[in-house]
Amino acid sequence: MKNFNSLFLFNRKQQRGIFVLIILLFLVLIIYFIAGNRDRQSLIVEDTSVYQRQVDSLKSLAIAKQNKIYPFNPNYITDYRGYVLGLSEEELGRLHRFRESNKWINSKKDFQNVTGVSDQWLDSISPYFKFPEWVTNPKKQNTYQTSFKKRKVVVKDINVATQEELKAVYGIGPALSQRIIKERDFLKGFIDMKQVRSVYGISDSTMIQLKKHFYINKSSGARIALNTATREELLSVPYFNDYLVDQLIKQRVLREGFKSWDKVVLTSRFPEEKLELIQLYLTLD
Image (cartoon, rainbow, N blue to C red; front, side, top):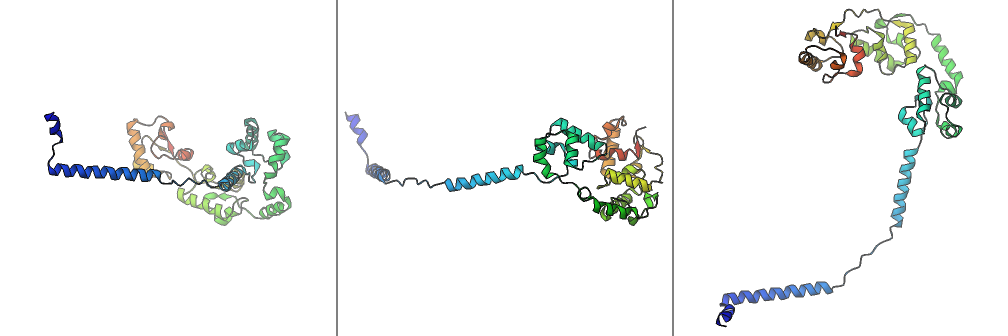
């Protein structure tokens, strides 16, 4: 009993501390009960139907814009556009084979005869067909062609042709003729008509007209052997720069010479799309 009573023997300092602690506990309990009994403001849910209608309207506009079909020339339907328009692989394949034969579709009836699409598909999509003005207005086009026929075009070397002489070819305007001359200056003269065909904006039909009026008199000379060429010789290739030449030499050493062009195009920053033109200057033999 004596030991039990000794547990409650505190000095004045300890008694004051206990008293302060009890007061703090009472204050915490009072604040808790006051906060618990306070009237809580109920959550007011406003009418959101107006906002929902606005959201639905925006969604409808987005879907309509996504599905909207813009006028297009049916002669240039890509695989992706054909998929979007609902063409089957067989119908799209017939169209591409027809175009590869250098023939043109000039009416919706032509399109159906070539592709074999259904009447339902044609009725829904053909209103968006947009043909060139020379198809829809042949009289104006005939006048335009006649003016070109009256122009006198001299057959000559394209490497010495002036811009005016290039513009005299049907299908070549100021911008295209300027690009041809710019490419000719970059190459220091064309050595093959393939280089002319690579100029942006020249179509197959325009190329046919060009070949009627121009030729290339410049001899390409002996091609450079890639596996033995010096750095200076490789830099003479118009499509090469310092970085690419250094990488080619590095790969040539690592591979103990290139055995095929498939290995050449693996070189860092090699312009694979220009391989056919580069082969005019280089050989692996």
